[in-house]
Length: 192
Image (cartoon, rainbow, N blue to C red; front, top):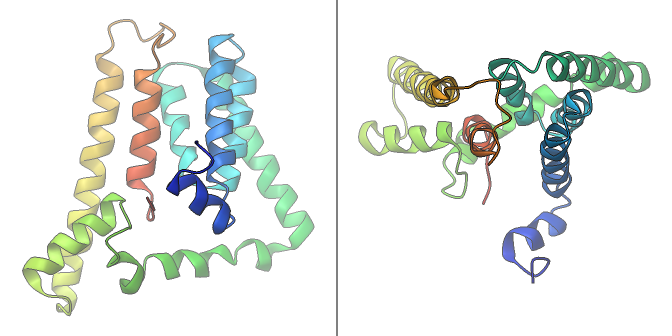
């Protein structure tokens, strides 16, 4: 039944890597359960190399004082980036910038099925100010997006720090799940 659900079906249809990222995030959670923080860091690094948004989970490791996971995540990301540059070359490795500018273009931000925070704030702003605002109005829109991003990240950090025993293992994984949700919200694109 899971394989027949619309989001999973679309994942296969468009050839996306979200199920692999989900598997890596779940495996990282299981590795942390077994106190294998190095493995968890490498799994998060692998997920971040596939999609950038899991990189925010390094913040979870920092606030939970999982320094081994932080070190392994950063080392894994560095090794992955160096391997990509060595294999593909610097120009090809940096070509993702063109794709990033495409997904933050008006035509992509204006789509109602883009559920991340930046496009949502943009659509609300355009509903009030119009879709062809002046340069100063666009600067205001970008400022509102930055403020919204900071608020969501700040609330996530606050919830993590509010945990009385930060050295505890987050037994029900609420904070870890909150960081995953925040990472998805703060990414430039989040399709249903």
